[in-house]
Length: 195
Ligand code: GDP
Image 1 (tube, protein in one colour):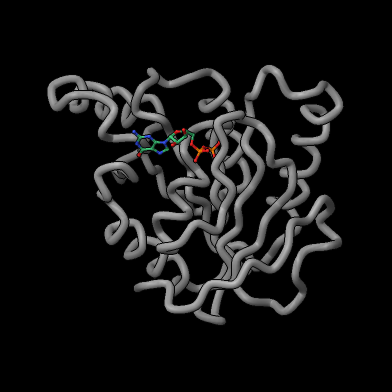
Image 2 (cartoon, rainbow, N blue to C red):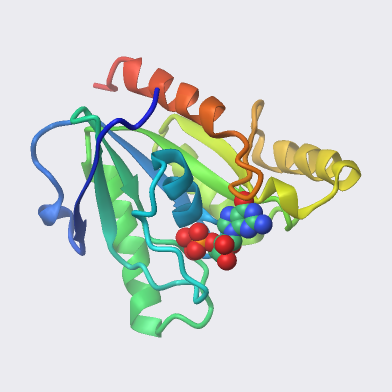
């Protein structure tokens, strides 16, 4: 699949503001600075999601309509220590209500930064996602940031910690992993919606 048409629809602070047309959704989630905006831009082939040097800025749920068929949803990043306290406090209920109430949600793309050993917050996030029984793609970002030898070791470590049979390795810098990720997204969209 390629993104022939991409429209930024809106950023929502509340679940009630999310689109109501019933189109299926694939949501991207990950720690702040994991490379989520960069990966979304890479997939969509244009600079449409905000990439920042200062992590933790996006506290809205952003909707991009792809090929007039489904939404790619950019959930706010978690774990930015310097975010204002009230903002951090808002994150949980906001994302929880998104995961709980959007029955058009077909799957999660969960991003993990290859540079770090599995972090407690990410493992907590995994438990949370498992709790909602949502189909999840585990996507490792910034593949170019570490050398081949270390890369294999880190991927095994991540696989084990997240109990993830498959990892998709991506690098925006090296333009790697985009086609494989699109293929998996397409599969999620074709799967029958959970009742
Ligand atoms: P977000 O906070 O998760 O949306 O992360 P961003 O997309 O803003 O990326 C955070 C930083 O990592 C930026 O400086 C990006 O340029 C950098 N980055 C993102 N993806 C890659 C990648 O694949 N390779 C390299 N080398 N840097 C990346």
